Image (cartoon, rainbow, N blue to C red; front, top):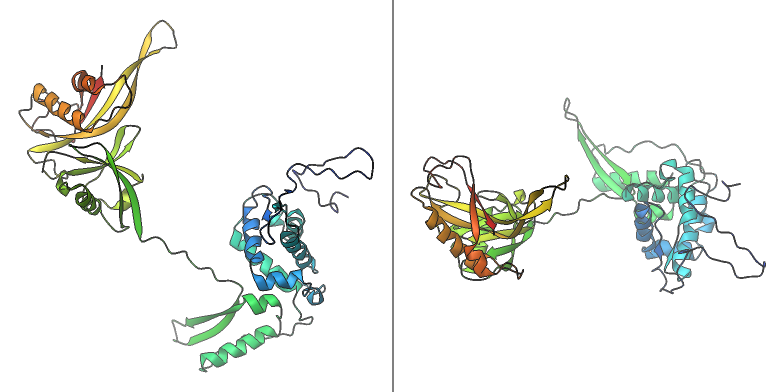
Length: 419
């Protein structure tokens, strides 16, 4: 039957025509002819079974357990009558799989039979979906233990209480009680004890027990630092990248302090931003936490002003500038053209007075910044052209006769359209 043949959804059948004594035709990618050292054979992915592959490779790398199955020591320990076991099938299929990993010398194999056996007893693993590797590993260890459990008749046991005895005494008694029902190599090599302490909130009675475990779930330590690549735009030199490493509890001022040391630019003359698609997505204040940084690639700018960029009530304000060109684009009606904006170059910053700023003064400031910070790769946009042929757009609805009025309460954005 298809069930006994272990055929599952998604598998392919290959039919060979010809004489019986011909060499068998292998399906594509059924196994590599490349020879590899013992134990380095890989496992093919059967759908989303990377959880299975990683768990099996971890177990295969345990010398004692692998030797136990390779040399046949497991055979006399198989318990086919254990109601909690799998009649020895999981242990036998695991042994077969381990032998393929260590004796075939193939680059990779497909663990179809082992997966089928696991899915037969635990339907949750029968499909091709994703599962938790730790959950699967715990199930395999428990199944191997019950298939190899040498206790045929398990006696009834009672929990062991401390009764004000020393921990060593209680622990030993609890372990001996556990061994009355559980005896296998999995117990010997994998299992241990948890010490549990419970205090009754009403009577303050303390209960201490020692419970067996098959594995320990330990949290991975998180990194205590973060690293950022910062593109620094100096007023005197080309763009340059710096790697900055700070604590996860650091603030933007800490990044600026390190940049100040590397660039010899005062920290209060540095503005830190996130840039995407040639536009400034966010710029940071000194008190912002580094946890607010989403993009690991940052842009920092040297500005002329010594004013604190966190305050908008000072005589000068820091203004970001973005560059774009207008590209004619044929509209859907095909009888007229639309204009599409294409952003380019690295954005930059200038510091401007809040009052009395003229258009000519603004243009001179922009020219000086472009001359120092814009790096042009396209031959169409020569630096001389950039310094002269551009129009200025003020992205702010409150602008009147002067570009920056004293009543302005918001950070302004300037856009340059290059002609």
